Length: 393
Ligand code: FAD
Ligand code: UDP
Image (cartoon, rainbow, N blue to C red; front, side, top):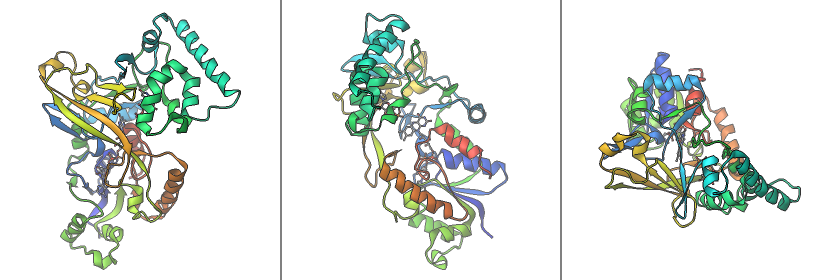
């Protein structure tokens, strides 16, 4: 007789939402996390009274009303709307590409028709250079979408910093996500709903895990987990040192949200990731850059973006009532073992390897693989929650 219905490995949004839904269904869960805190990548640390997004800026956005109502039933969300600004050698442009961007880029442009005509002129130039063939890489795709002025000032160098490769060597599909709008609308997302939990993401995680047993500093693959098993009188040796079998003596089912390749001890090889590192500091001013997100779109700065965390949750006078501010510079780099795995790499080798691991995962009995690490898939927050809400628990 196992002690729990579910052992949930990882307390990020996938694991925490799963624990919440399982608890609602009357199941007993134990959640473990190798970090010293719960919440995975949405975890925030308070500095100078400001919630600092420790693992990168997180803005919740969705068009799914069920997901929006669900998260708001736990913690109400604020009215934050993501309107990033690009800085190119000191020139400031609104993102995503919209009438505000175009009027700034071309001072003689004032109307949508004028902007469209200017972009069409530059698109025609790019299409002519292709001589009838399809765009083969990100550079060609971007030139055909928005023309050379926007490409060279707002896309090329930012993208090269982000991906560490020349735009001619990157796949075209990456850039298809950038919206182009002929209206004065700086809202980055097209979704119906967006915002930040009032009081921060930690509150959301606390609500999801309320009444659930959790254990931090407990890596499923480490001695700490062995010690946890021992505390239930479960010995690894009884199971031929097979950790998954031993874990099944603790819980009927395992929900695994850690890296897919690590679960299988990298037996087919390692999956690659892109990672980001952060240089975070306190500035002695209430308002450092006037916006939560500024993208640096030239090689002049080695970082891609600067985040000023207070603007996610403080508006109007509240910005000045808090005398200091916390900013983070983001540096994008190649992942090496020991670093935080952030973005899956979408190339042939990694896609094929992930497929092979997924086939192994499908054969595992009573183990659910879920979330961005275990599925090796880039997931925004809302789809992770939606996925769990649709599982049969
Ligand atoms: P995670 O949050 O990574 O949680 C996995 C947990 O498992 C971690 O706590 C980890 O410590 C734990 N774990 C791993 N291995 C083990 C082990 N062996 N033993 C025990 N515990 C283990 N989404 C948005 O919607 N909006 C955004 O603005 C946004 N910005 C992002 C910015 C960045 C830089 C990144 C990387 C992602 C961003 N996302 C954003 C995506 C968002 O972070 C994910 O959707 C979300 O984190 C997925 O939750 P998860 O539970 O799958 O993974
Ligand atoms: N991008 C860009 N300039 C910017 C912002 C984004 O060229 O100022 C490009 C870049 O190639 C990036 C892609 O658009 O990889 C998607 O960016 P987005 O911010 O939507 O996604 P994320 O940063 O979450 O990957």
